[in-house]
Amino acid sequence: MDHFRGLFDKLDKNKDGFISTEELQSEMRRIGVEPVCEKVQAIMSSYDQNEDGRLSYQEFLIYMMDKEKKWKIDFHALDRNKCGSIDLEDIMSLFKELGLVISKPNAKRIIQMMDEDNSMTVDWEEFLQHVIINPAENIGELVSSWKHNLVFDVGESRSMPVELTQQETDLSIWGNFILAAGLADAVSRTVTAPIDLLKTRLQVFGSKAVSLGFRELQTGGFRSLWQGNAVNVLKGTPQSTLQCFIYAQMRMYTLGERDSLSVHQRFGLGCVSGAVAHAVFYPLEVLKVRLNLQPAGTYNGVLGCARLIYQNESVSAFYRGFKPSILCMIPYAGVECAVHQSIMSWAKQDPEHFSDSKLFLFSFAAFASGQATSYPLAVIRTHQQAQAFCSSSQKPTDALQGLFGIYEKYGVRGFYNGMGASFLRAVPCALLNYTLTSKFETLLSSVL
Picture (cartoon, rainbow, N blue to C red):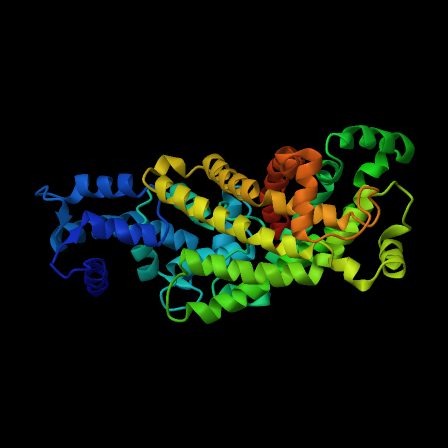
């Protein structure tokens, strides 16, 4: 009974000898149980005998003993090798029996949800404590709750790194995820490359982009729709990986003894890590724009494009448009983060909002808000990158001159040329990344 008393004392935060509804809800939210209100209400209605809205030790003891009887057999069934604890292989076997696929990193996260002594195994007392706080009715419901906890927060932009725990920053644990995410990113960029090409041309040529695109299609063929995609793929994955690594290292230093970062700290770390990674790989962005806008066959591949820029212009040409590009990141990251946090705070008031489709909708709303505020700077950047060969650009201009130039030529509307294409590309791109990352991670875990 000592472990029962210990759990009761742990949940009784204010040490008044009772577990209140708020204290039970707080612990459930800590481990990611959903829907919290419904599950707490079910416990209270069954075990709060005097209906005072809280559980005494005797009332909670009855609840815990009922759970003990219910889950003892299931625990022994999960313990495949009969060693008295559940390990990584047991979790993976369970998912396989239910017709579900899980990667090793995700199976480790499930173990870590229950593992109190950092042994990477779960004994009976640890498992019982978990199912008491996470009151599932059966194995299927318990697995569903685990799957909910494993879904990455889709409210974060794909340009913002995933927050990893200190253990997960070890390359041996999250290497497969980075590789899987890179492969998924390459596929999504390739599939949506024609839309990205249209967006770039709309930013530079405005309404003429469509007629120019048809002309290019006639001369360059269907393959011309993927012009510049190779360098876009080469840029995307290494840049995201570097940003994720920098963010993870700074996060560990900033976090210290605390459990999580504040919104302002996430914003600051995201801006710094994003700016550094963006600066390192920015020349590839310039190459992509050049390849996107020039007629097919103008450059002999990526290296040929880089060589001609170096010979005919200068090294500084590889960083043309860099200032507005960096400035673009600040409102984009700040607004997206603020909108996402506000929406998620509202959504937490109702468990029904936590479906995958609604979380994706919330993510898109945050992305759209960030894009709308920062998009003019992105258009200025693309114009500066294209200056070397656009007839309308006789000499390099700074960001302010670029701003007035676009306004004089296209009006306010010119600052949002191509934004519709950007939104159109974002939906299939995000869905492909979300779907393929888990599939590639599972495949890599079984191979490596």
